[in-house]
Amino acid sequence: MGEMRHVIIHYHIFKNAGSTLAAALERNFGNCFAYFDAPRYDKRIQPTDLIAFVEANPHVAVISSHHLRPPAPELEGVQFKEILILRNPLDRLRSMYEFYRRTAVNQDPLTLIAKKVPMAQFFEHLLHEFPNMVTNAQLNLVANGGGRIPDQEDARRAASMLKRMTVVGVAEMFDECAVAAEYSLRPFFPHLDLSYRLENVSPGRLNTLQSRLQQFASKCGDGLYRRIEQANQLDAELVDAAASELGHRLDGMGFAQVHRREFSTRVTGRQSFDAGCKRPLLQRVRKGAARLLSSLQGSPIHSEHA
Image 1 (cartoon, rainbow, N blue to C red):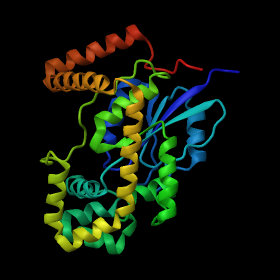
Image 2: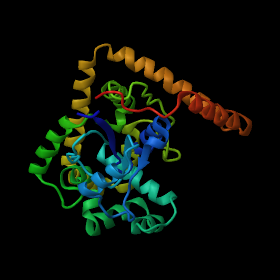
Image 3: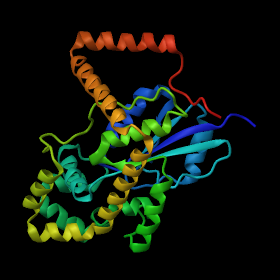
């Protein structure tokens, strides 16, 4: 029997703090980290494609993908460690519109539409022309691979899938997700450090979820907002289930608050260091230090457990 290979799969659902997590993972794993996406925004990567990619890249320990969908396939000699982070569905839709407004026009036609119309008109258009984008979209991706508008049976199936994830949580509790992720993954990747710097955050974003939802409701109007809210009832239930599962796992850790405080200290230190390194001289020093550490330590974080 050879050593078991452990591969992390990060299901990067659009606008669910995925860029922040992917950046932290890439910093940890270096060239053992890989992005694996389809050539088009509207394509899905099949399990057979993932298997072929993993077999062709034996050095890869982490895969982050917008186009992979759970569950992970079975592959002899490989244990997949799945990460799934969800988000309040209405806040996610608000953030999606703001992202489309500021990003360059690309293959996705919604980027062009968002630049042309205000928020309310944009979501009216989605409800009529792209209902899969605005109706329980996260549940659709988790349960159906994005293939159809989900129903109650899909919701039950997705809730059971959450329990099988190595890491599960919600973007609104990102630090707690990271603490639980370190706890679950360090037996396989002992030096994992998911302290982070925020990535791809909407400029001028309000600090609290409640204030962002109030702003969203104001821009949509009461009638449209209620329709969007109703269209995402199952999504909201799935997010609640993910938060509950995360809470259960934190309760089972022991000294979770101690872990949380220690993690917060690391995040503060990293963000201060990264802010200082924006200056050219310090940035060169930082890169030189990183190269020196790499040469002293050898390869990036790797699996040490059979």
